[in-house]
Length: 403
Image 1 (tube, one colour):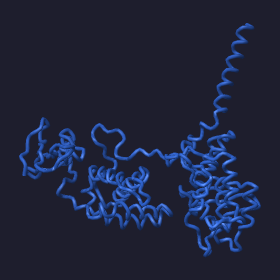
Image 2 (image 1 turned 135 degrees about the vertical axis):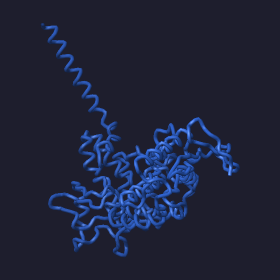
Image 3 (image 1 turned 90 degrees about the vertical axis):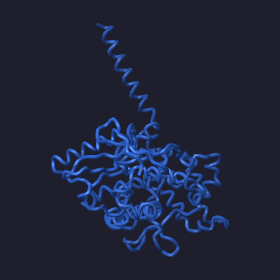
Image 4 (image 1 turned 180 degrees about the vertical axis):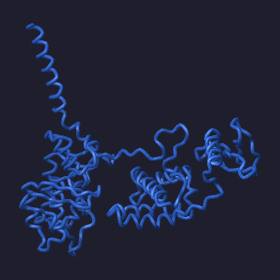
């Protein structure tokens, strides 16, 4: 064991590691000492590599002294925390029953990114340093398409860990702190990565018509586009362009969700787990009339076996690329993908001067802040607002001159 050296904080000592390093230098551990039941007790607070400092250790020491004086539970009296694996078992069961599609995504993220790394650790053993290392490792890992894991995926994994710890605390399974909420000294934003994946690209009217026409050429099929013998890919795209629906929301549509008499669609099990109502256009109504199932409980769009569709056909991306929509585009956020149809719907609404509140409702956004990204597409309203102010000042000036 290395020798403890007193710091300027009473009761706080530091130990320089013999083999453990951090940023090219020996790592430093901080220990605190205090009396408990008339005995001198030592406790290791943490390492510099975990974000600790002598000052932070002094804060922990003051908490221990306060706990001793006021009867709070001290280290050594607590039961050992459960393992991450045990928590995952309970959390994923709850998630699958309460979070619908998000529960499936939770399970996938756990199995692909968290299981092997954390399963054997107790909840009180997972430190901020462990999470930083996971974040770093994931950012260097290549996916099946030979691209690095996206920052948004990393953020989702960290959010899952945070949610799991919060539930463990709520359920009385863990009495410690949530490591995701901790920040290094002097840090403002914490561990969550910055995610900049907002898509600015939307289709022009000409591009949208060109895409729909190409998708509709089911009577002039080439071998390359053999998936298009059923025009459902065209119809799915049309529906997204005219309602802003996500692919998953379209795949979930059943006959009972379409009200042709009142020109209304009900989207259930949306990303925000809320039901959304969308008016339909004449083109969409005409298309849906041909697709309504005999049984109202059946899906409107099905695969060749009559089962629910799970993903957009690869033919969509091939046609988009063949049309040259992505030529010379390296930024994945600016590439045209199926989700661009949803973004196009909102962008067209903004260009036509639709209020952001209405756009938020039609898109199913939880807050108007999510729709503010489209505000720049309606500059005329800002111009009109400024011009109206100019008009007011002009009237005031005229009145003063007349006086």
